[in-house]
Length: 329
Image 1 (cartoon, rainbow, N blue to C red):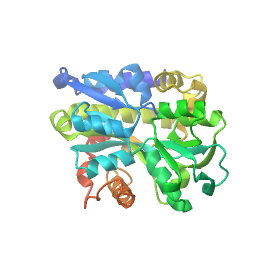
Image 2 (image 1 turned 45 degrees about the horizontal axis):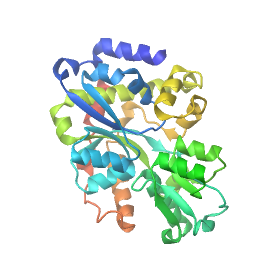
Image 3 (image 1 turned 30 degrees about the horizontal axis):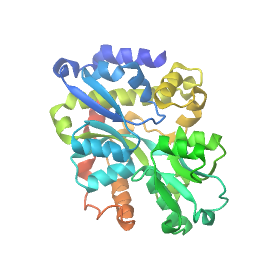
């Protein structure tokens, strides 16, 4: 398989730099069942090979849970959306973003039944994981539509809880991400708006990997190797998306970890705009725009009463150095 050959080449040419001094390092990673390219090296053990660390993979249902685990010291690296990242930074938790997974487009959406237009949302039960990018996007959409959030029964449910509630007929819709979004659409849900629309309305969202600052300071080679493997996975996908078709080993790896159907994986991957590793440290991402995006998100969350107040500066919570170092290898 192309990805395995690519990883093997990386290992042989120095991607195992972290191994020599980090053999005893324990790395606890918090991940979510989201369809994206780094599920492939996760499934194949490439992170373990490259970092030389003993890795425990801890699955979470949403970014708020990941942030709570980071805050308690239960995990070292975690996968979160821009809204949970902003909430964590606004609480001045000792974290920093080290990799922007991708800008969210069609991969998150508000899918509903019995609702033909935004004003029909009044009185409806709409589920979303609170403090997630989906929650942020839902609030942004309601503001754009001039629909009072208080008129909607917004329920705090994790993705798998949303899937079960939809199957039971307990909710009228949900703002959620794939693969649960795909399940809702397959079960008769229609999309009222997705995160591409919300971005155009002033609420762009993205996913990112974050790390505890103390872990990064103590284990910089492990973090750099983690970023390198992640970047290599995206490079493999971006080089030939067609090779990640429904019958590919990559689709099978992603389906196994996320619960998505392998046949749906190619379409679900197109729900994100993935930046390459070489772009990560640049001005459009960790080198500039990510800080501004967090600040803009904080201003909105403060307006909505979801955080007490935005910080004056969020640059301490974004670290492009690991991406720059990984890209230079």
